[in-house]
Image (cartoon, rainbow, N blue to C red; front, side, top):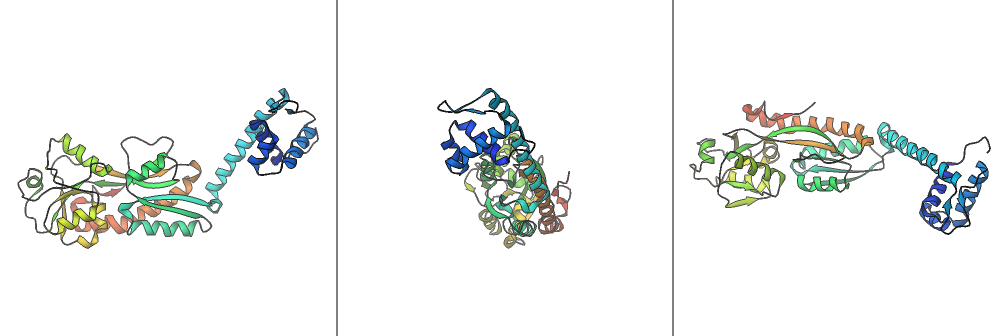
Length: 321
């Protein structure tokens, strides 16, 4: 064995041959010519002074020395992959592609601000940006089609995905501005206004239905919507009332002045908006996104809503721990 270390290219090629049992297959896998792959294996064997593959077998098999050496090669290449991940977390510009998703509740004001920050922080990175419902975002995360996402916290944690809670978003009643009754009038049907519900298939709609069931509240199922804008448009026209959240109300600025919020009259409940990170080496980038997200939520959503509805100050708030 010579004193110099073998080429990393030789090691990668050796692993490819060991896994496939064929120089031709390894050449296709590593996108090299057959003669180059064969030469790299011969060079490594000459460097080590030992035969690593039994060339007389088809497919080729490891020699005893080759099997021992392959274990060490796997460890070396694994450490290099980990080092590359660490480098990407320390040097953001090392990222070349980031798949990011933002809940559609934030698409009008908070989302664009976060996107602008990302383009400034990662000028050489290509972004694939999704705006989806929480249900769709969580499905993309489960399928490993996203790197970082902001969505409603699911009932059960996502496996192998880190979660960082960002916002406590309590459920409240949205009523016409001129409504003179109270929450009990609405949930007991005494108001005369129909209940406009979110679709049960949505995460938020499911949370609302679950709480109503726990409290024994039964409301007519005449109207069901998948859009906050559609619901609040009817509320603004004095055509119904809804259970929604301050963040949904905040984004629907066209209805402010014609819709107001009142407290849920029974045991309160809330949803949590979280940031999800699918890869450990993206933690530093996620922290940058989280800081920007909280800043935008504080100024664009929490501030204006709690100023108009001071009773929400304790309930509608950032989660910073």
